[in-house]
Length: 78
Image (tube, rainbow, N blue to C red):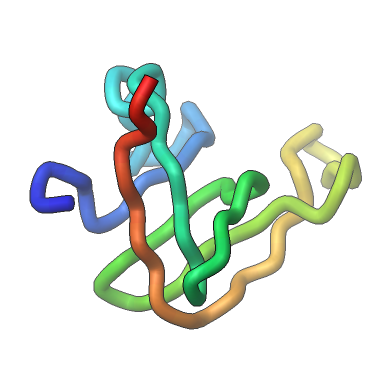
């Protein structure tokens, strides 16, 4: 986990977007549970943004909800 960034986003417009790392495959454990709908996370602040189904805002971006708790990012093995 030492090579994982503190904050990462899947939105290309975000300053925390890292395409190379996302191509490798990132897994997120939030409160000990595997999450597959994470749009952005921050380990130091202890939060994740998860998408709310297929709902989108007026700009076409997914609606998200911020959840707080322990975040554990990891590289998925292939």
